[in-house]
Amino acid sequence: MNIKIPLEKGCLQGILQIPNDPIGLVLFSHGSGSSRFSKRNQYVATMLNENQIATLLFDLLTEEEDKADALDMSFRFNIDLLTDRLLIATNWASNQKNIKNLPLGYFGASTGASAAINAAAKTKHEIAAIVSRGGRPDLSKENLKHLHSPILLIVGGNDTLVISMNKEAFDLILCEKKIELIQGATHLFEEKGKLEIVTRMAKKWFFYHFTKI
Image (cartoon, rainbow, N blue to C red; front, side, top):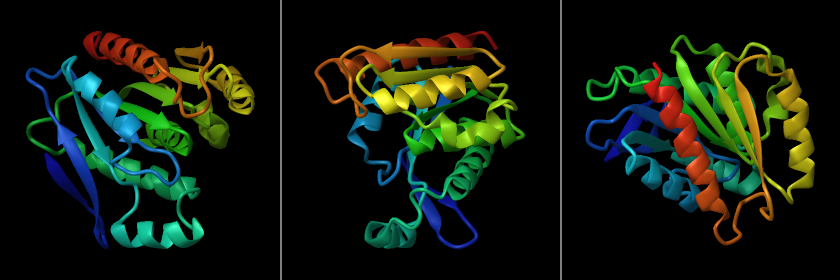
């Protein structure tokens, strides 16, 4: 279902999928330069839907901002703005009749994972679980120690620089946490079968934390 999340100026376009008898809702916080049409995130979302997990894929930028960003990349690394947009989407979802009582989770990729960590640390809503795929949690150092949501960090085994960033961030997290390195995978998990491994790990993490509430 196509949805629009209102802003003071403009709106954020999104895709909300609700399976029968959902056990939770995962909001996707995509990486720099991506959108609700990310094939990788759409794949993960579809697999979550097949396991009774509702998903919200949405653009963190308005259409006007996206056009400007395509020219000069003026928005994609603005973590504070991306965090605010995720908070707005979280508040929106928490007021929708058909999903407002569902446990919430975040799936963040690249810089979107940083926004997910920031939002989870700041939101008034309980975030039951976070999954970071090739994320940049190092960009959220000031919020890592304030994080209360169980977080799974998934990193490609060949993504050397991002591995070190994730391990550094992992040591700063005080709540429930886990880090998984997927051998043979690079930053985008484009190698055969690697995204499927990410998806299995994410499903397991969300399912466990949604059903224990």
